[in-house]
Length: 215
Image (cartoon, rainbow, N blue to C red):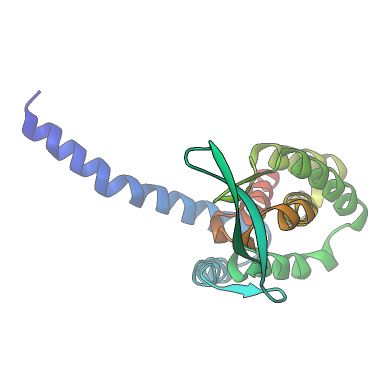
């Protein structure tokens, strides 16, 4: 094949692949909000607001210095180092999803929400792992599956809102809050709840669950 066409194909992939990914994510999220009952204008506004607010982390309490036992010289030796430790919460990745939960909750069936949230919390706690330098990592497949399954099983008429509420609350409680004691007693650094913004597990599990439950 002509090297010129290969170069053109490579340039096309480099330039347009990120645009296609962004387009599908934007469309998917907008549709997820519409499934939850928001108008197209409100869905777009929420998404743009969350994207902008993803850069804002609000400190929870004061930071402190702690001693951390760390490896050095390629793991052959260890030493104590002082690190700043603290907790913050992301405006776009945690607070805004929680506000949406608060908006949806009065119209949602409480018993299905409670049961589904318990299930998602349990499996989020089991599957979440703390990775140094990256924070708490959660494979989103299991929480999504259980949020959608139990929402459809317990409340098929309100499955989208039940799935979103339980997805957001279950991941927040099970993956983040229940792992905080371990992380904050043994690890340094500032942990941001929902720090991935719209790409954080708190929001992604909620919106994917709502989308799948509503189709």
